Each structure stands twice: as structure tokens, then as C-alpha cells.
Length: 269
Image 1 (tube, rainbow, N blue to C red):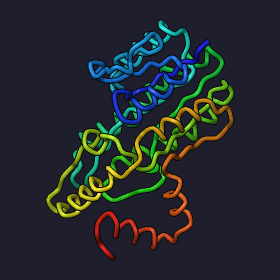
Image 2 (image 1 turned 90 degrees about the horizontal axis):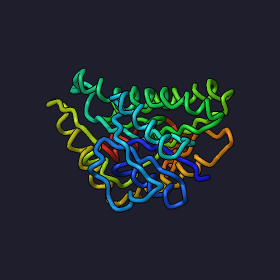
Image 3 (image 1 turned 30 degrees about the vertical axis):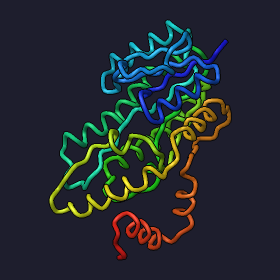
Image 4 (image 1 turned 120 degrees about the vertical axis):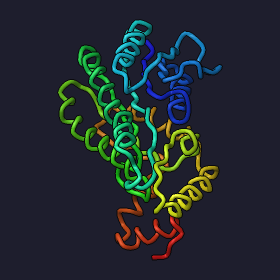
């Protein structure tokens, strides 16, 4: 019997690449998304459905889980991928922007986990894969709001390992490094403040300049697939992020900050 994966945010980027990768390997795929009208040719066939799911609307989470169980009878793996980045200086972030960042990246993820857990417990096993970022362990300028959510996901995931082990439910964290997707253009919201205009322009220029040189999301999809099939207690997988994490671990803090400031902000001090 084919295994089943439910993926949030599957209309593009990492979510789409992951849905396609699992489908190619014989899995049943519930490729959930906020706009099912975005469906393309790859999402056709009896082994894939595309339920409407908006992580900030709990009723759509419940409906997507129900549709998946009705179609495939079981959910083996949940991939929490939906999210976006709020960038810009914290002084320019409005309370509404900050709340919405957490509503999507953290509260929506938590709501999805809470609704899937009864299903996984009844089944006697399952895997929950939370897509975080190297930005859940490192920090870069003008990304404080996004970092706050991804650090929250990291801590949440670590704690969940202890809570869910007795139910044979595994927790995995995916920490991608920089990858080439439409995330920079469509998955990013900017907060502005006149005092930080030069810094904002510098970071935007840097981000746009490196995007086309980054690897695509397919490598992250492979890491997610590996995690889904890994029955060990391994928690973290960092596709394209290992070098950054290693550098951060071995370099003196002052040197690390100097490099980030020089590269992203064009400043030497």
C-alpha cells in the first residue's frame, strides 16, 4: 500500500518540488495550497489531490485532513512548509505585520500539528516534518521578524520529540540554506522605515543579486523525502545550509559578524 504525505504550501517553491518528488516515487500526495486554481499538469492523477488549506483558518486544515483520509485512508507524513518572510527593520514593523508573521509561520504550523496528532496517534505512528531554515539557528540583518518565527519552530520541534516519542511519532526539522525560488519576490513582505532606507536597499540588492546563482528547491525536496523515510531519532537536516552552520560554529563571533556585515550591508565595520 502506498504511503501518503500531506504538504502545506505546495503551490510553488519547496512545497511544489516536494510534492512532485514524493509523487514520482509512488507516494499518495495531498498537495494543499491557498489557491488550488494554481494547479498545473504535474498535479493530475489518482495519487494526488490538492485540498484548499490556509494555515490561519483552522476549518480549512480540518477539511484538508478529512479529504486526504477520505481519498487515501491514511496520512503517514505531514510536511509543514507554508510560510513567508517579513523583512525589514524591526522599528518599521507594525504590530499587525508582526502578528501576521507569527500567525502564518508559527500559529498556523501549531494548529496543523494539533489537528493531525489524533490521526497519527490512532494510526500508531507517523512523521511530522517542520520546514524551518538555517535562519532558525543563525541571524542576518533585517530579517528579525522571520528569524523569530523560525527560532520558535526549532524550539517547538525539539520539545515535541519528547512529547510524541511514546506514540511512535517522529519529529524532523528541515533547515534549508539559500535556494532559488520565487520566495524573494513573492514570498517576502517588506517593512519600511526612512532611517533604514540605505540598509534596506543594500540587503535587497544583495538578495536579488545572489538569487539566480542559488541551487533550486529540488535538493530540499530530496532532504524532506530522506527525513520522511528516516526512522532514526535524527532531528535536523540542513540541505545547502551545512557550510553556513559550520562556519558559524568555528569562527569567532566578531569575525562572523564582520563577514555578514561586509557581504550583506557593504560595510567594513
